[in-house]
Amino acid sequence: MKYKIINLQPTLSPMKKVKIVLIFTLTAISSLLYSQETNQITQSLKKNAISFNLLGTTPFLGATYERIVSKKFVYEVGLGIPSIGAGIKIFPKGIVEDKLKFHFGLSTVYFYSGDNDFIGAQGSIIYFPIGWTNYLKSGKFFGFDLGPAILMQKTICLGGPYVPGTLPDGTPISIPTSEYNCIEPSLAPYFNIKIGKRF
Image (cartoon, helix red, strand yellow):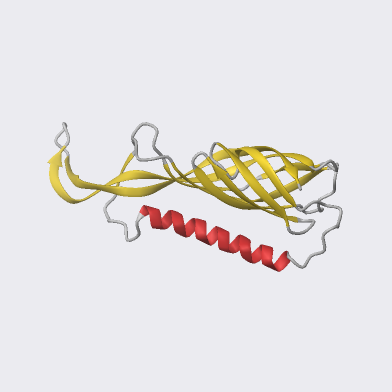
């Protein structure tokens, strides 16, 4: 378990911070999708899809529902082990069947696997994917992407009140006497591989 010493108690709980990030991302995505709903979509293009994923909108393995809301925008919601996520993919040159098309986007994942010190984890991931997807005319599709991700995982911070102490060499220090949950952000590479079926 990672420890971090700071001098001030947080004014916002770790869980509230994670929820705010997730809600903000979902709200931004919903607003963007609503503004694009009136875009014309080719009638022959199947708009709904289910896929199995490695990472992406899940931190491990999971399933994702996708909705093609225009020829340039795809919305996705994923459920994983153990997580929930949502995201949007943008195709600058539009979706064309049987062609590998470039996309980029934004995904947010919230995960929780308990409080066990060895395997427990809780936090959120904000992922900025860049990749390619091929929607086949048969209805099947596959995609892959990679990019940077911001991992905000719950950890333990140490705080006051502080008591005086000394190091072995005699240097005076202040020793924290309390601990509390906090969020420790970090930047890491991330990726997604998916295979699915449209309907």
